[in-house]
Image 1: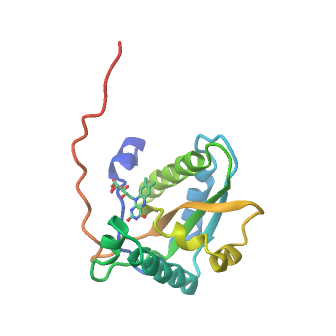
Image 2: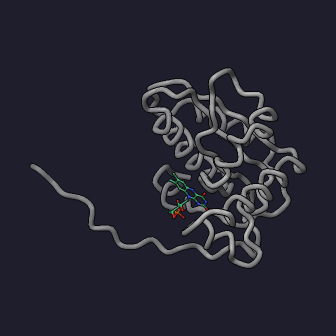
Image 3: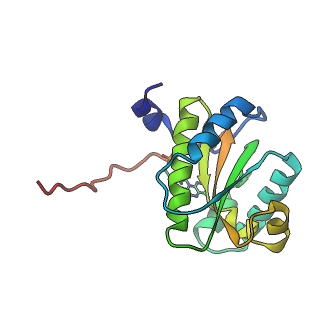
Length: 178
Ligand SMILES: Cc1cc2nc3c(=O)[nH]c(=O)nc-3n(C[C@H](O)[C@H](O)[C@H](O)COP(=O)(O)O)c2cc1C
């Protein structure tokens, strides 16, 4: 696939089959995670343990339902699962340094495009972060000292009953100074 085709094909997938991403593809995706533009440290945790994924999912849903506004509304959709049944969840963590969120975002975006190139679905997610910073999850993640989860990306193959995609609005957000 050409680069522009992968970028244009990438979209958030919100419903996955049980089929796991194979290790070769996963390694290719993880390899480019460290080739994104970068201005500081971050750590990558790959979660594929189905029980742990279920715990993160369920606790995230609880937290979303206990919140207000958009997150509560999303979690109230019948059958809503914050991890959408994805078999792989990659969590990016960083110490609290300048650009921590930007470094993570660059890396996740690069992984998402690489995954699209391999025919693998992804979704950038921050909704589980509130859960992951709880003591129980921090212990389980075994992160380097001082690192906190910032964002994550779900990986897998789209299921037939995934949530319908939200059409992108036409954006008039470019100006030229020539
Ligand atoms: C910082 C960030 C956080 C996001 N968090 C979530 C999330 O928690 N759950 C979710 O379903 N999508 C999440 N998304 C995905 C966006 O909703 C999605 O990228 C956007 O609607 C554009 O749609 P597309 O990815 O299909 O092009 C997030 C995206 C970004 C960049």
